[in-house]
Amino acid sequence: MSSASDFIIKNGILKKYVGPGGYVVIPESVTEIGNEAFADNKNITEICMHDGLQRVGKKAFYNCRQLAKITLSSQLVFAGEEAFSFCTNLKTLILPDSLVVANVDKIINDCWNLREIYIPRGAGIKATKDYEKLMGPWYLRLDGCNRIEKITAPHISCEQIAEKRVLAALWGYLCSPEIYCEHVVEDYQQSCFKFRKKLLPKLYTEDNVDGLRIFANTGKITLKNIDKDFLEPALVAGATQCVAFLLNLKNECTTSSKTPPRTNSIIKSTENKKKSVSPEERMLKKLWGFEEKNNKIRLLTYKGEETTVIIPAHIGQSAVAVIARGAFTGTYGHGSNRRERAISEIVSIEIQDGVREIQGAAFRWCNNLEMIKIPKSVKKIATYRFDETRKKLLSEPAFMGCPKLTIYAPAGSYAETYAKENNIPFVAE
Image (cartoon, rainbow, N blue to C red):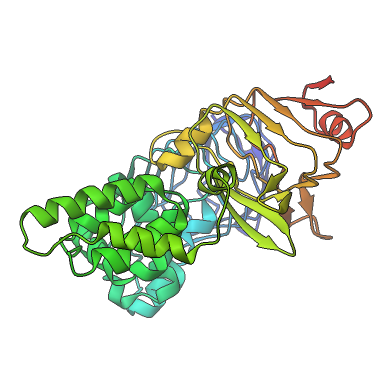
């Protein structure tokens, strides 16, 4: 239980908590919890706020990794950015209906064990534009909260939301439809079809069949549009699983229609548009999403499902130079898409000689990754990097959330220095 000496309070603002931790009750004299008042506290396990408290400042409970439960004030109107971020033991967060000012996707990130969140519409928010600006309805897949099983929030029609946010909302829905309540499903399915030309390329890059099924469930994929709008782009992207699903869907449509199938002509015309490539290059292009410039390749995504992975030095005539942020993003469990779950099962990775850079969070949440072989050619691996104020995070570690990892690399290499500086087990080869 808390005592008065546990708090530094000035003019009703709790400036700093200096107590022993455990169960903490906020004093009734406090109307605001200041910026970073509890930040980085390793001992608090539960917070209870009285109903007179109205504001929670920026990073107020940031990185409180033992904090398992928060009872928020029923009169809370404001929560600052990252107020509850990195509370990795928190499983439920019920935001009060009084909350008016808060970007929900910014106040709670990287809460790895969060299972349920309730998001209010916010008292006093009347105009749709204001609501979208302050809260952002349903567009969020909270960064680093990949174990969420239930989101309860008010729904606003996709037609009332700015296109940029709609696309983010729909992508979150395509990746994790199971966490959304039934009353939004029809609106989201119809909107997915409306914005299909912008959503499908990313879906094909990840070869996301589960997302494609949502398009099929709208009942709007027909023999008239399946070839041009769906099948041909999937073939060009090399999304083999999506192609198989669409061909099967087309066959089902054909059995109930007199329209003859045109699958062979599509495949032939598509292949004629492509340059002649070797079987090895064709296979690599199916396994990897990448961007190419000046014969240099930046790997963006791994699309395979093997537990042992070799990162190539070349794809075709172009050299692989960079492993990009998020190329191997795994998951903490429920609510993630198939690709993320497959990456989480990877055990070993070998990077071939020639690759030069591994960017921030390239191997994020590869929680079963036990070994990675890094060649001497790698001269840059991302780590934590902040701006001059030490407040803005500019870069994350390349191997964030890889608890089992050991780095294998030549003695005296940059990888050895990186491993030792970041306390990662190292074996010289």
